[in-house]
Image 1 (spheres, rainbow, N blue to C red):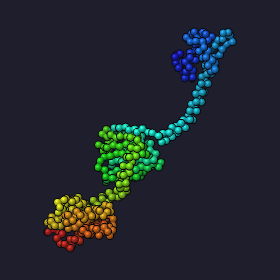
Image 2 (cartoon, rainbow, N blue to C red):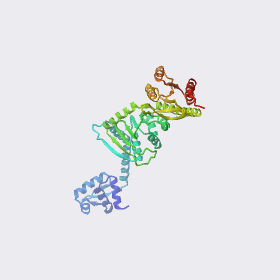
Image 3 (cartoon, one colour):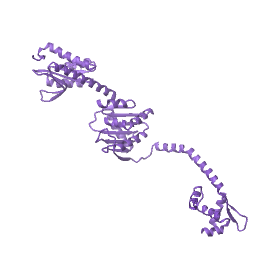
Image 4 (cartoon, one colour):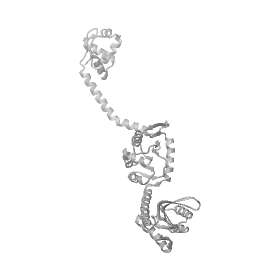
Length: 405
């Protein structure tokens, strides 16, 4: 070891620069008076006496009985051993107080500040945005609210952020998600329903929002809503400003109150799929009888306005024979009235409104007032049978429903 390194190591044990210089001089030169030490180190004798007093207290130096007094360096081993013991004792004490200190500062960070300066940051690129969401979820205490596109839900799953949301739920954190639920999103939505409240709204724009405890928020408008995780074509703004976040929370609550619970929306989608399957079967049956059928057809009314129906069927050689069908996936008199009004415009021979719930007396009366018939079906086969029964019943009463042979 060099002398320079020895000086550094001794200072680590608590010796000052002057103490180290005096001790090394005595080790090298042997017993010496304060005057000799002062002259050789270029300092005054009073400073040397003060240093020697400290070294004697540390049991590194002892004085002789000669006049003038001389000072002799003692072996350093005992000093180093005592130093190590002191350091170990101090480290042990610090270790014990570490958790208490951490807890205290965490308490300070959670306590309400008198004034908190708003902070914001622009986050560029999907990977960095997901990393920011992950950090935000680490800070959630009470509630996290998300607005996500359908593909956004899948991307959170790909990044494993759904697992974080699931763990939050297990410790009592509320998780609320608003998204647009269509047939392609049903699998993801059922997954999230295992640990979150989910509601459906129609979203004409690709929006993402994450709100944490009314303290921080991340918002973005997605230009590229693909499933890719590394695109740079997405920019988000992270904000930590309670007043601003509370305003966003009010907007979220407005959307939430207008939204449809996910279970209800999933039921509607299943019903719509059942109706589509049933109408496809009806089309095949009618086409076999000579009808020209459109599933998702349109007719022009007397006012010149074009009206859409879920199924339109005509007999090619009977211009006045027309069948229209609409499906009603959810109960509501407004939908019945809308169907009646557009049917009045096109004047079909048969107008059927299919539904998957038993119609009540008011619904039957409202439909009949305009000549419509309500058809109840629980599955595609029953829907096909019910519609064909209505067609056949009218065919028996009116022979002109049959095409000419």
